[in-house]
Length: 321
Image (tube, rainbow, N blue to C red):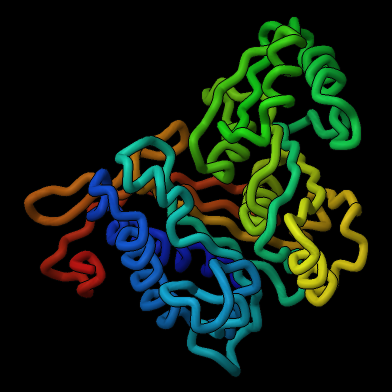
């Protein structure tokens, strides 16, 4: 993949973030998502690659989704790439005006992303140098103790981030009993997974069950940042099991490693929609807007933070969506 794609992707997430942020705190999740999708789709159409969405928001004809299998970019004869995206990671967050909503996208060579169905995935993620200390097949207590040992600190110094959901009641109880601290989040486990790799986030481990597509996006970011992650699909019914098998995953109980979720050279980009631990949200000014983005490449480990000022009198109309 051309390294220049990394900077092209910033334009895509900036457009989605600016459009979605117009709906910050207004209580309309669908409108915020529609704005992000429309802006992302329009901007993707200008990039010189032959892209296929393999991790998207839904199936064909499920508007406003950027659907799985959708072709984006200028098309052939440009390079073929697979795309994982979430135009608005944290629709509820944005609608509430809460923290850590992102617009994010990742690209890899064709066939290098797990084609994860729209179902749940159990996940565990940690930062650089800690992959050897975890296993999704071990208990939360064992993993916390092993992380504490690897970091040469006490269990009480470890912070675990978990989605605040009824399904995590037992997990939360076990983590509390272990003596570790918990940061409960309403949404946004892609941002939470990335936080495990950020030295100032205060997050040590991500645990729990979230979306499988978001798992692939998180894995893409962790590949670039030197973190580690494992996942197991958790289908909710037989229909989702059959769909996973149709998408090439015959063994639902398989533990997917980081390299199996996102392998080979990967690029990841995210722009903040609302303020968060990793990125600042969109700030509107009289003349336009300011955005804060992160762009990463697994091949070199380069991580760029980009603060951009957008002048609306010289930009396309995506900011009005």
